[in-house]
Image (cartoon, rainbow, N blue to C red; front, top):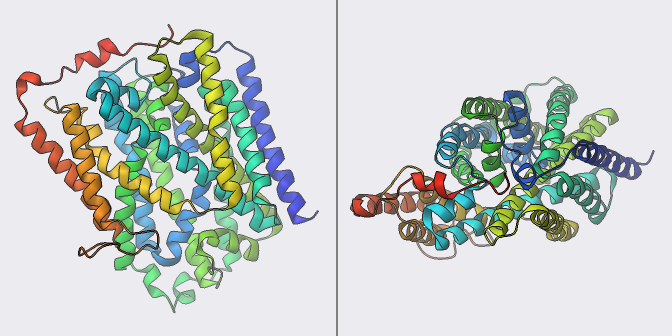
Length: 483
């Protein structure tokens, strides 16, 4: 069979299987709005771990870690792994705190409304939707580029197939469908990853990386300064951005109880760390084999050149499962934030459920269009990361500091963003002003996070205790959308 036809068949069959499973599962039961957006208190430790890992590991793990490995080496990959693990581990504390304070909650944006007021709420809502839409676009772009590399399939074909079939079961079943398919996807992803990694090592031919990388020994050095710097950048950027991933906040209410929450998020973090590191090694192997000319697809270049056809098929199936597992999480996350907003205006019941489904279906249109063009979304991703870095401390600080108002939160976020932007690289990834350190992501993200944190703490220290926020208001004001 022609590679192009094979790639299309695998794409359609894989996406079709999960569409059928999601629709079949949800079709057997009545769904309320609560089921649709959080499926409250239903997941035990096993399902919690499965859905968190499936949602966290998108198709990006077959691109970004390997690309990082081609120039940042082992040091950069360690930072990438830690950065990907850290948000999940942080939810062990942050998720438990949120669930105690706001037991009937649904989203981080809902918390922002009641804790900080409308200005910080709308800023948080913008950050959440912007980040998750960019993430969604990146996932579709990645799988479309991968299928094109393997079989020459036009980008628009893959984007339409994957986007339409994923949104079909997600819009129909919401969180219920996502949880069910996540469990299956988890049990497909982990074995396939192990098979692909082993096949990659065999395809590498048994040579040691040290011998093969005599011309680039820094890639194997733990003291490689660019790798260390990029690793630190990734830790800041990924942690800050993932704190605005509504899919993760939804799942603090999906799990059965707080002990389950802690176990699920901790185990998921421990699973994600080695996965990122091992997939990143494909980039180093690609360099050693002279296959990293286009570093953005280094892993796929290595797979196509050095691995048998069955392994190529396994990688394509893996990529499809990964992209669908993360896309349904992203779609559900954005829908949850928007549905919670709509519910504040009095809409509920069947009408709100219909609105939620329409919103979910509409969300996929822009990502499909952008993915069909093959545009790089890297710069947009970095902009989203900067905004998240500036806002993350004020938003999370509000979970603990009573003497911290909505005005203080928005001022801290905006000042941090402005200062971070002064160091942020331009579209050509060079500095756009004469400030020392301009053009450095490390300075930019570090300044955004550090300045907003310092200002937040100062506000909390000088604010009058008479105006301190009463955390009991979160449990009193935030109620279930449907009983």
